[in-house]
Length: 294
Image (cartoon, rainbow, N blue to C red; front, side, top):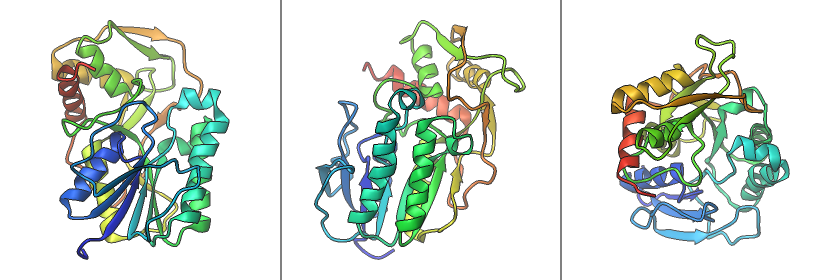
């Protein structure tokens, strides 16, 4: 790696961004960080980055030179919200990405897309696929990562905003922050009737992104970051019960619009090296919850 290679990270104070900034810093990069802190809270990345700016990627902004790589994580990502606010999701995820490519020059544009892209069941998914198309047209070099369900923590950096991810919600229930957890549908055509998802620990995902920074763009249609293993909702809850010793009370609720039946990696990216298990994801998240009163 060249000394003082310069990387721009958008969405830098968020869940994934904070883990990525921390690991890039450990690898010796110069890091510019952008975010708008849309959740009204943020992870403290002051020890990881060289410069932080509050930048909305959908608006005019000043660019300080070129970058060896850009890690574009800023975006909207809540499926139910996207069903209510599709315009906002296209504006931020698609047009924000287009704005980045017009204004920021880099030979290595790394993008956070989603496993929801295969079913296209929500404006969130469709806005991310639109952004993928824009990248393929405009970027000099790129790696498009389709993230599956990102979970766990390094012990300090955390998911922000209202809890929407299953493992976080389950960990909060096990920690006594919720009386029970809702299972949205138990009559899907799966092995136990609940939806199946693939999961990847945020530490492994951040490492894959750093690999993409170091090794350069793939220019492939997409790269999958997951585990090659699908877990049903009930299996995740059973795992949380097992690793915490705190049985979670469950209730069956109606299906949610926009939920895919099953989403599992078909071929894992060569940039990914898996070091964490579903048990690690559950236990790491639980330990953070019991030590975090927020």
